[in-house]
Length: 234
Image (cartoon, rainbow, N blue to C red; front, top):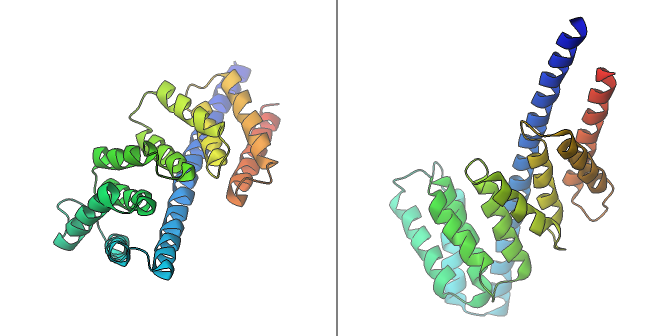
């Protein structure tokens, strides 16, 4: 009886640890991706200004992006200046210079997501991912953010297929997609096989010199927790 109680407690403890780490993985992916989006947007604006290419569109993009990024409490109904910035970003995504459309779309998606319009954000991301004139890295990022925002709403099988596809495509978002697969493998009710697969992915991530430093650190931390749990259960 004592062994049964101990095993049950260990199972509960291990499941809770897995859920906590899965949440941490998902949050880390979103934060990292959004930070890079902001950096890319600033770089794109600088490139436009230095090249003196379509200054009017560049100025409209920069002003709208700055309004969105410096606004607080972006909840509907939006302040007039923020709503106007959203309309500008939507116009630039649809009609702006080709090299600017993706950046405008990311800013628009960010605004819509923060204001609670997930459907609108998904539309902006899908427009980016489906655009042939947008760089591949931007299309992959849009897909990644769309999938992450769908967690808790979309079918787990659909999410797994999307993250698996991204995890197999070389690019800056590959490691983050692999982290998301770990999160799915450590979800409540995960099987022993899924747990083993999560450890395999984490081991590969922890040793991947091309992965972002934060990804490697999180992978190493989670692997240590797996080891602690195994040792404690023994």
